[in-house]
Amino acid sequence: MASVLFFFGAGASRSYNIPTMNEMVDEFEETVKDKPEFELYQRIKKIQEEGYGETRVDIESVFSVITGIANEIQVKDFGHTPYFYIKNNQFTESEFKKEDVENAKKLVDELKVYIKKTCIFSGKPEEKLNIDKMGFESLFRNLNLENKHNDDIDEDYYLGWKAYTTNYDLIFEEWWENYTPIIDYFEPRANPAKKFFKVDGPIKENSYIKLHGSLDWRFLKESNDILKTTLGAFTKYSVGEEVMLYPIQQKDLYLHPWITLFQDLKFGLRTISQWFAIGFAFNDEFIREIFVESLKGMDKQLVIINPSAHEIIKKFPDNVTNKIVCLPIKFGDKYFAKQFEDFTKQQKTLEFTIKTTSGRIGIHFSDDVYGGMEILSMSDDKLVSMQPQKDHVFFDQAFSKPADEEWELKTNIPVGFVHPFEKEMIIRIAIAENNPLSAEISYAGELLSYSDSPKWNSELNSYVIEEKITPDRLFINN
Image (cartoon, rainbow, N blue to C red; front, side, top):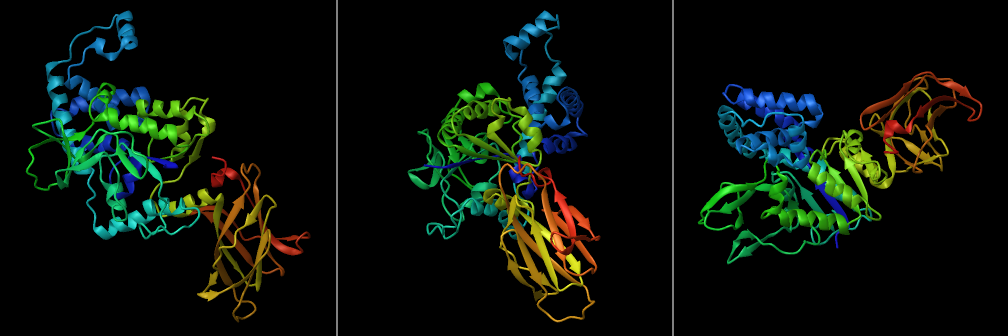
């Protein structure tokens, strides 16, 4: 049985140069700016941005309106409450202009072409491998808290998960299939090389459910079957359109295959307690409501991994926010691996750059934290000896140099913390002599503090630079 659930949004593919749903709004606009339908697109976009704010408008919200116009939806189709509001305020029920309907149909067709082109990674294989390493490899390796080697895949990656996505791209499955087959609703039929969608019970673990369809799913023309095929590959089957839900309409969720996929999501949320939403903004009201209802269950926790996590949590009702953890980091960037490792180990890896002419440097931590000991210290490519203690560590210059010559210590120190860490963290960098001393402390590339003015500290009997770092700078309580 799976013990971790992942939900990947467009932000999980962003490091592969696949735009997010918000970015697609402006990018798609560029592709139609010289066409007659551009005016309609701009008009819809502007009204949505005025009503909801630019950050809440994505390609799905814009195309929900465009699809409604293309399908010539009537006021009564909006639902009971909107219909009452429109009638009660005596708004007209006039039909859409014929010109708008025709332009909306063009926009829908152009969107499909744009998405199919945009959702394919176009970089070199070595570039993709490097991005994989910073993203998915870091994610699944750091979830393997017991550091067990998995002989089945010959890697230390965590297994025992269920994953869901609204993405159309093939990024996730292409990475995992280097190690183990991805389980989904597709099974071979007659010809082992061809897989067809099979309606079955919920899949238990190591599965990847694509809630909005995929670039490699195709309807067969002569039946309602869905074929999973390699992009651009020849097949003897007469295939129709891709199986992709864009944009999502709630009425579609009761049709094949969407009803099966969303029932699987509800099953996963009901049976698994630990969830990670990565690069997903929860703008989709239907999916958000599924999460809200599931969060009301016992022992559920949702971790939102997104630079805008603190804004995203505001979309949830107050009665479930105590079960949501905000981790405002960016999946797949150069700091993600260390930040996610820190999260799983309840620590923060601080980066120190210290310059002095003294032969010994001491780093002391306040009582609320303890210094981790995974330290490799270098100065001019020469090893520096260290003496770790319970709440401090000494670094000794282990090479000969003139007494007044400055040397530089660069070291990363994992600092554990007691959760919730509500007080400021006090760090003291100490030397015994009244010599020049400067200290820079950073976390994930962000400068937290810098000082070059040590002061005498009678408690430590040393000249000390004292820095106070508040929890919000390290995202400890979020």
